[in-house]
Length: 276
Image 1 (tube, rainbow, N blue to C red):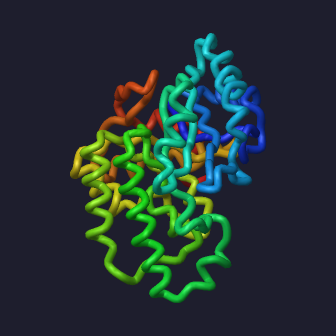
Image 2 (image 1 turned 120 degrees about the vertical axis):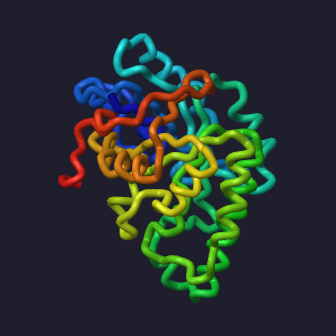
């Protein structure tokens, strides 16, 4: 039965309520449903437009917790936090008081610019500038992985979203990042949302996913859903990619402790590869 952790409700930039997400999960035999709304505290101290307000966290956690009495799906309380260099203590002070089952760390901003918002941003850059942005992105991911704040690393290689790729060789930067992720016992998600974007590929690429597997970095599978109907988006493709990379089990979380389930086709749920 499928599990999915990286999902957004209307507490942040999702389009549906937590109740609507839970109801869809019940009707579609989702075994474990995690809700992980955006928390993006900018270096200015303000929250970004996609973030829930800091003062909404208590209500958010309480509402998700109210569904934990259900037998199915099992409900998990999560959060997706944007990483900014030097913000570790700020983030820790905000999220530590809450009983999250897992914390997702993500990088959406490089040099205070939102890299996944618009293709126009990437079109305006020279190839040299794009290569530089990729290097900075990987540096941010490494920095984040060493913060000790997170359990899951979100959508590795997100900068490719709009189909703009580096021409410079990023292998060394990526290897350094993955070694850091491994040392810090983090999980990498295979995020299927990219199959619906201009890059037409999951995050991370199959090459990076294989590198993760060689380092024994655990993986989980999510669709980064913003509406209930996308909770299992392209899961068949995700399962196929994970198996191709050599994964035989998938990570799950409860009370910030990791456990594993065998990776099987049954976990793909309702979403058929040919239909996506």
